[in-house]
Length: 225
Image (cartoon, rainbow, N blue to C red):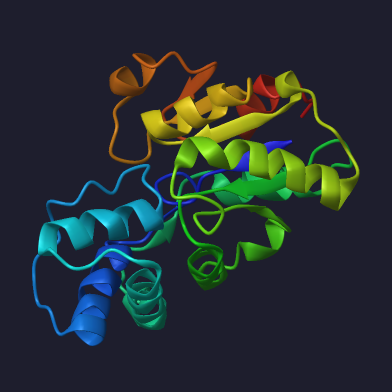
């Protein structure tokens, strides 16, 4: 089973998430502030919102979180129209190759809330590749999402995957750590904000500059091309 991160791994949004958060913050709370200093990479939406509330001294409770999330999600489709957004190199070929195999399931393991994940992937025509996943709705802590994804695989597919047959693919050290929590194989790809050397320092099982080489990626999964 493959568990995919979204931002920086499957797609780039051209800063759409930040723009949607900033306009959502104005819409929900009337606050106009730069959010450039928030730590986004590998964080869950709920953790990011917690950082925003702390920065702005706004009360961090469930009602306010829901208020900002709803405003962010309302702004996200328009923000995604930015020309800088794209599917990352090789991704469509890899997803298509794996979708035709009975011996491989694909799902999401992402810091996005599910509604945000579906908006982002739907914008690029990728959502259908991922019938289920684990999301920020399940926990604000990324390291708690792996067990959720494994449980959903059992419920959705009736398969209890051994850890060595689970591959977590992402572009940050947080993705690598999240995979290691469940004993999964971790595949890092340097298509986000971290270089090959920075990712290598966290000892992923495999490391790629990008996923243009479909055959090499399939070999890493132990699958014949």
